[in-house]
Each structure stands twice: as C-alpha cells, then as structure tokens.
Amino acid sequence: MIDLTGKRVVITGASQGIGRAAAVAVARAGANVAFDYKSATDEAERTAALIRETGAEAISLQGDTGDPAHVEELAGRAVEAWGGIDVWVNNAARLMVKPFLELTDDDWHGLLAANLHGYYYGCRSAARRMVEQGGGGRIVNVTSIVDIQPIAELSAYVTAKGGILGLTKTLAVELGPHGITVNALSPGATDTPLNQVAYTPEVRHNYEVRIPLGRIASAEEIADPIVFLASDASRYITGHELVADGGFVLNGNVGHART
Image (tube, rainbow, N blue to C red; front, side, top):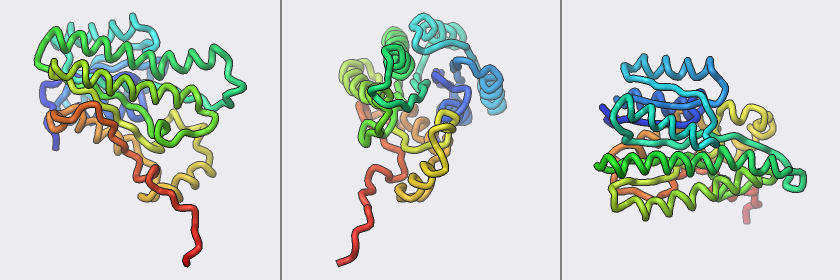
C-alpha cells in the first residue's frame, strides 16, 4: 500500500526477526535493501533470497554494529551500489536478562555496544550521507516499550533503549533543516529469535492476558509501521516514538471487584 520504488534502504540486524521482516516488507514496497548480520550466515542468506524474490536488489555484510568501521563499510557498500541512502533503519540488538547487582563491566558495556553505540554509529553514517547527497531522508530507530514500562533485570537493555529515544529526539531537531526525519518505533512483546529463551510459557501467558489484543505480535506486524516511517506518508512526523504494543502499556487492569 506504500510505494518505496527506487528507495535505497539500509537495515541493521536483518538476518532474522524484526529486521528480516522489515527488509522483506520494504523490498515488497519497491526498495533495494542493504543489511548486516553478526553471525547467522544461513539466516542472512535466506533474508537476501527473500528480498530478491520480490524483484529488489540485496546486499548483505557480516559484522558487528558495535564496530564503527563495520557500520561505515555497510553504508559505503550501499552508496557504491546505488549512489546514496534514502532510509536507514537501526534494528540490531541483543538481550540480557540479569540482575543489576550481578552485572559485570563487560556485561554492561558489551550490551550497550550493540544496543546503543551501534545506533549512534548508524545514525552518524546515515546522516552524513543524506546531508551530503541532499534531498532529505528517513532514519528509523527500532527501540522498545521498556522505556515506558521497565522490566526488572533488564537494566542495561532498558538504559540503551532510553538512550536511543534521547538520540532520536535530538537528531530530529538537528537534522530537520536538512529534510531528514528521525523517528523511533517501540515494539511491545514480539515473537522473534531474540526472545526465544526469555519468553517461557508463563511469560507468554502473562503477555496474552495483559495485552488488550490478546496476543504477542509477529515480526511482520512490527515491520509494517517501519515501512510507514520509512515512507513519504510520514514526511511531517519527526522525533516521534511510535508504540506498537497491542495496547499493552495502557492496560492497568488488576482485577478490581465490582462496586
């Protein structure tokens, strides 16, 4: 329903989960897609194949978004192939569920490297090229509703997601004069490989009870609003956090007795 024909899109962390779903969704809308992945080579090849099945071009690059040289290489590959970048989606992340008092320095800095620093590197690589080429652009930062409703034992993860929102809002102000919009998409509970271990049957049941729509999201249901934020349909929206959580954070029901 949204036309991205000819758009040049970069997505980080797209070997599976939300990243893969977003890559396929923008390709179906007409965009060419460059993406990276850390280690899941077979899954990344599958993502590339799915992109090409739509008729779009695909570029894949292995590496760590916590490494600024890798992020620059990903941007350079897209520019070399297509002459520029129109949309950049920061999505790569990892999850760590661990009590705060048990975290090591390596735990903390390692998680922030991918979940926060990688977004900084991605925004920087995208913005530099969008400003240089002129004509504006779209930056979409995939974050999480945990900034609104924090979860115990996710302190590093929640800190990173809060930082992404601060970065998003600041860059929206700073890059607006260049015609570049910067927005955040905050998914709620979503079925992805990232959550396979953390989502025990009990956790799934709790989500299904608490989410007004009655179910955990699929990756495709999170990809659709990414397509919207990547498109001209969102051209007058910037610095915004779009929450896609099935109404989860709205639900304060605790089972009050009727009076």
